[in-house]
Length: 306
Image (cartoon, rainbow, N blue to C red; front, side, top):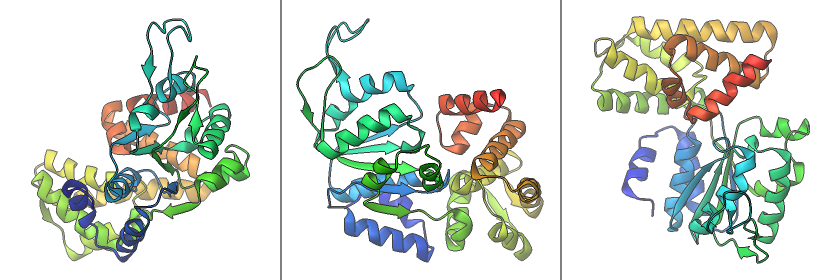
């Protein structure tokens, strides 16, 4: 069964959609079949992956974010290498996949991988064997594969940006994680939890609560958490005024998106730049988004070049 920490986090969720997802993951936890978790940024893919792993009884759990390591270094980090495999390889190195043993390999945001590593990954998943760099002997993969991807991965497949054969191989069991705006009971329960955690007094009118439920939450759970944490910083009280401030900012983004019929990628860019204008610090924005500072830096550089 899942450990107490993960169970406690999942038990916070009270919406019927989340309860159905928990039940489904409980039923497939013991299988060795790959699972693909699909959802928007901040919707909780990491938490659900860790819950599924914990329910499986496996150890250890390796969360490998596909956007954190440059593709030129991915193979050495993941697969390991032998001494002399390349300049600077002065000793043998066991990669993350070897360390995973019989546990779980969670390839987080697999949709960020480039075409070269996608092709290699497909062969490895099919054969469950791989070569460390500089080695002529193959190693077995005993770990279970979990994957996560952004909500538009199928659109990436249709555009030719993500291999269709790899997508179909990893999505044997595909699990969609609903965005927070479609889980109203989770908004209520998470609001109460974050208020307790940050020591914030929630002083919202009925209209203020309704505004929270109607708000589209483009940043999902992390955005709600940040709202409550910011209330702690500014007086320790969550008021209708602070909620209105959040709603106005979100409404502006949505109106801009509707006017131009933005893609999800364009909406993500607008939201990230909005957070950078609001907070000014990459560390804070990366934490809100649930990505590494390097991943955020790469996104910002990409926006500058476009």
